Each structure stands twice: as C-alpha cells, then as structure tokens.
Length: 143
Image (cartoon, rainbow, N blue to C red; front, side, top):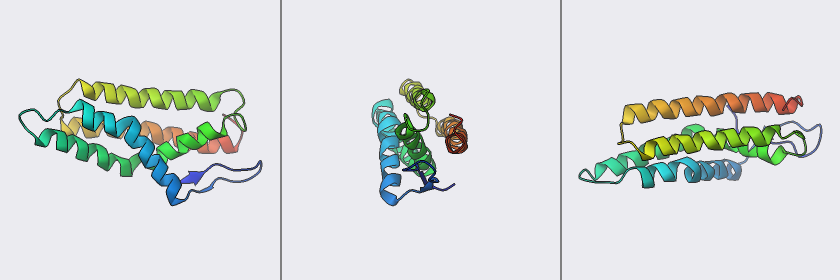
C-alpha cells in the first residue's frame, strides 16, 4: 500500500505522502499504542528482558501500521470538507477506542509474544480495512 495524502482542493486526487507525514504517523502510533504498552504494561520484574521484549514487539509494529494511522489522520483532516455528516469523526473515534482497548487489555496481562503478535495483527487488519474503505469512500463522497 502507498502512503496517501488527502486532496487539498475539490477534484484533486489522493497523492503520495512525504516522509515527514509518514514519520508523523509513526509518532502518533507510538503515542497512542506503543508507549502505553511498552512502558506502562510490562514492568521488568524478576526478568528484566520482559519489558525489553514488549518494547521491541511494540516498536516493530510501527513499521507495519504507521501508514494506516496516517490515513486515519488524513480522514480527520478531511472532516467538514468531504464528510459533512460526521462520518470521518465517528470512524476516527472507533479507531482510537480500538487502540485504547488493545492497550488496556495488555496493561493487565503478562507479555506472551505469540498472543501479542496475533492481537496486533487483528488490530492491523482492522485499521487496514478502514483505510481501504476510507480511501475509496472519501474519493467517491460516501463517508
């Protein structure tokens, strides 16, 4: 998938985002999901590697989903221009609630890397489906 930037004027197409936009997406993901999971969820305890493993797993996820977070941000920016009925805002709220639920679930569990990766993959697939729907829906005025 390509990183996309929202159209600036009516009739414009979505265009590839620049590196700064992609970095912002990664930073946003770190703040919403990675930091709470890596630094709050997993205290080192008797095995100091436990916290480090959580941090490593969470940070590697940035490479897999940063473009999806960027697309959600683009949808929020488009609110009022192309989605006058609050569709983008509702979608963004659902995404944030899902990320918060993921983080909350892992605050109360010991790190189990296979389960963590499986749940992270489900979260990615959810974000991916939303990103695809939004890219086509906004460009056709359906959101």
